[in-house]
Image 1 (cartoon, helix red, strand yellow):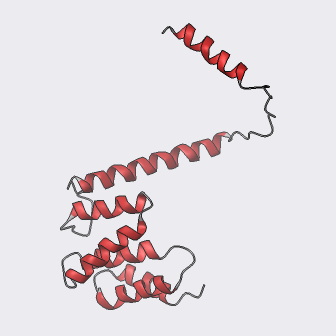
Image 2 (cartoon, one colour; image 1 turned 45 degrees about the vertical axis):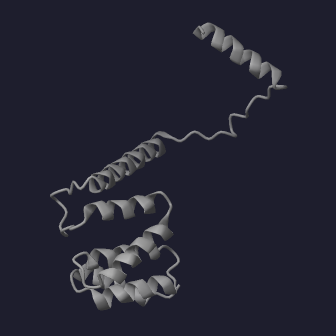
Image 3 (cartoon, one colour; image 1 turned 60 degrees about the vertical axis):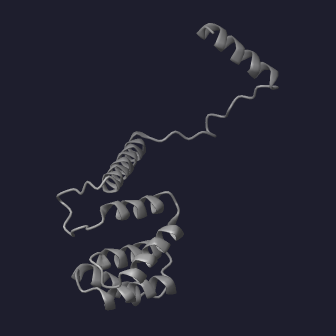
Length: 156
């Protein structure tokens, strides 16, 4: 089918669907240059994050990572679940790891990932419990421990 024929068929379909109404130019708000630049920057950041998660799933760990990751494939899979909106399934994976390996090499990462996944606004009892578990079971990262203590003491 030629491009010309395709376009003519499409116009014919549009004519058959009823009366055409013009859109009000004020009804559609186009972003200004600054907002558009922010949107592009956020899209590029999201792409970068997805690429790093894919690297973890492929067991490629960036040398800049400060905390050693013994099982990058599993960490990548959990992050992918969270990004895809399957946070409860990601939490089940983390809980299963914690149950089976309560003194395992990834304990600090697992406990911190639970805090990150559970402590969205508002801070609730589930978040405080995860932060409390992190503080009492992990002694690796002073900054994260301080943040977890703040979450424990947050009233929301």
